[in-house]
Amino acid sequence: MYKLIAIAVAAIPVVLFMRAILVRQSKKRAQALSDFKQRLDNSVTLVLVFIGCAVVYAIAKLIYEFLSR
Image (cartoon, rainbow, N blue to C red; front, side):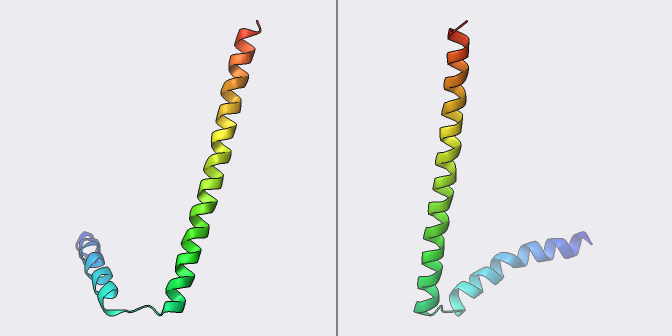
């Protein structure tokens, strides 16, 4: 079983390399993929900004509560 897993793990980079060399993407598909990546990056950035705002709010609230005693 371990040999099969080891062979699969060793074959993955070779398969990905051959796919990158041999398979050409059409311009339409490449543009769609680029747009999708950009939207995904924007979405991740927006979520991280919301998380940052929540952390700043929580820290500010803790400091306010600590100083108001």
